[in-house]
Length: 137
Image (cartoon, rainbow, N blue to C red):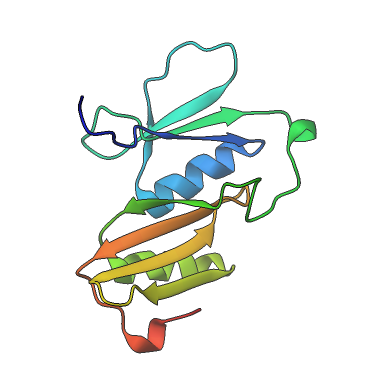
């Protein structure tokens, strides 16, 4: 048996165009091929990849739950990215809540913030130290 790995994350959204802009701006994900499902949505791909890692399913606004940073037992998902300084600048420009912290005892830095649907996204940076003045709990 092959070791398991995360194939993709699926999010429901009543804000498809806002979500597409968010994930392109912050994670560089681009819409790509998607099977002809009965429901509208989008599959998002990292640059140079033929594997969609984020699936968005569009739901009517009336079916959307109240936006909250936590839905049920789901808390967040994390994506490993590069370019800590630029990423942090984009997050700050959004003028919303975020947390920027080094992970004790590792060379990791985590930036947590919310997408347009209230889903918490963690951008994880490896071997890109954060200036202590930029740490925000």
